[in-house]
Image (cartoon, rainbow, N blue to C red; front, side, top):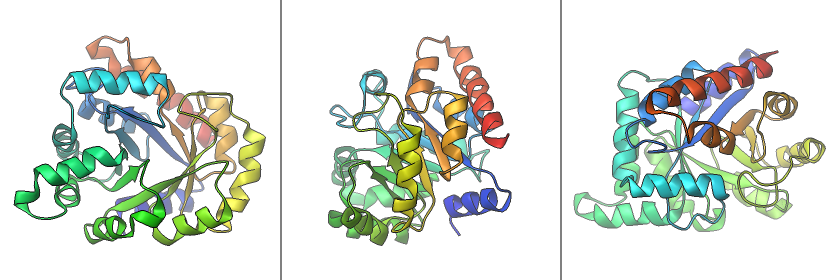
Length: 272
């Protein structure tokens, strides 16, 4: 059983929902990410999504785009991010880590490291301790080989679903997805719009007709009350832009504590 599967199984057994924070790797300081990851776990995170900065992030709103730009300016790429995960794994062997980003950095990584063998990203990510990968611009019908390669390295390929997803698209995702799926609750980019909890509640049963892995909901969850409402129908709550906003102007020694305190509020709401 993978770390992701084990985490969701344990949560289900205790009738609890997963809290999945997203942060951009290397933001707001190049060296803060492993410490920030540990703080988020201390705050109640069950799975951590690490954003891989990319110069043309089509699904990211201005908050996460700005964070990615800053991380890129620090020279943060997949090599550095895998090193961050390895550092985190030195003292945490249980919390799943998912890399979220775009196809270009992964394909470029494979090109740059092809001398060490094919599928270098999957090999190196697994060795570092990564548990799953979410590639925003990989449609399910075009990445069955990539999904198989990840599974061969004991990693999950996680997909996005949206309010506009058809039944046919959900069925395609169901054939290749593992770990969990991430339902994007808004039409638009991260951090945009007001979350319609009623629409989410109506959509989840339809998704579950096709998807048989846990369903997380994100985009637009910014406070404890909304997180608690969503958790009544979803298996996981994903929060990203709000965390980025909270930590972006903190001093180096306050970044981890700020994220931990915020997530503790969300965790308490989810468990109440």
